[in-house]
Length: 525
Image 1 (cartoon, rainbow, N blue to C red):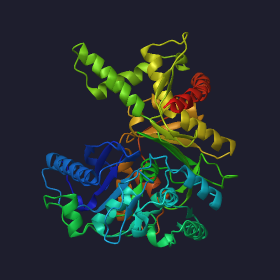
Image 2 (cartoon, one colour; image 1 turned 30 degrees about the vertical axis):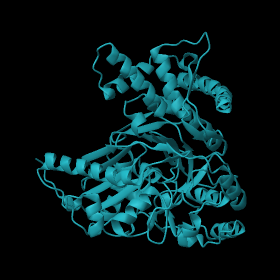
Image 3 (cartoon, rainbow, N blue to C red; image 1 turned 45 degrees about the vertical axis):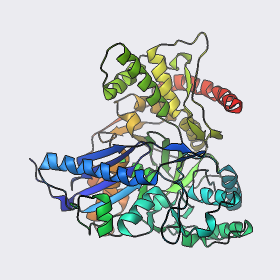
Image 4 (tube, one colour; image 1 turned 30 degrees about the horizontal axis):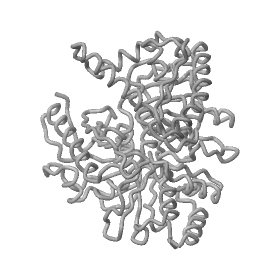
């Protein structure tokens, strides 16, 4: 059994859309143990949410599974670690009163009811404010005259909420904060002029506020962000085994952890995170020429400007179809391992036509800002002469998962945004050489996948915790990741195949046309 020194280890916990996952890494940055918990959002009163008790039950279950893994692997109870980092889905709205009580159910990034607010704020700021951003949720509540607003004293993201309960500190990493409200990259803080503009708009709606006082404080990667309090330790581990006093690093959003997990925090680097949602992050060398409603401007965990193409829908439709195929197999008496089925189906797609044979799935379970949909309705379209077989069907499904992203990336190409390569991570890339190959064709750029691609955000959060714990004085995040974490990382890079590029372009043309059918389906509803 290898030596185990928990005080030199770091723990990353990320609240994803379908899983809460905990990853423990050692001082060499290799994963040592993990645990997870499956959860699902629900549509309640027209809004996507997670129950507050589910947040804490899920945190405890994921941590308990990790602690059990440590006990099995290393024969010891986990009583401490060197640093903990909390991450979660960005954006959304968690609003609290003076006593710290939740005023309304958690409103997630998936909600698209904030269109009027997003449009008004974008026009006022001259800066794109997407519908899922926290400030858009707040301003929409003002436009809707919601009853909770007079009692509002603080609002934050899911990562900020969990961190607050564990440490007592109302803080947020700059990357996650940049999805609440615009960040001035010169100062690393909220844009002061836009704060004042918001205060004016709020007063005009009858809600005079000091927005800066309602927002969490902003911290860069590596900053001191509090310690695990006795109450926080009991909340994380009700068995009492984990002891208080463990330092925590600034909480981050899933975009920031994705950048850390893929060594994509320096200019001309980029990554694509693909799970329930899919988004590309490209670190900018220069500002964009104008405001694009399809492009978010956020930051790296250390405050550098980033262009983000965020799409709400990625793997949900694939998951639903794989469940159906597994059910069909079970009907025939076959016992199917779901992971093996995913791998087999992804590999089968490589036998499909480069354009997916005319099969066009539209994978919209919810709205899409890039293509300007406020709601979604999954569709599967084909013409009588389309070639419907399993390979084309699966290729079309995977293409569909990245089609809207490709539409957004076209904007960055027109803006001549430089990117040397994209690094893919998340569940879509677990089957080697499949989604990676298709993304290279869709993006028109080399795509790298590292050995740790499946680890995703919680691994990236553990790396940010490691940066806080182990970095040398004055060492930048980019240097730490480049020289201490990824210098010898195993990876594979695929360049775009011309036939795949041509095939994906044909598919994307049909996909754009199919969006008219998507609008018609939503109009009927």
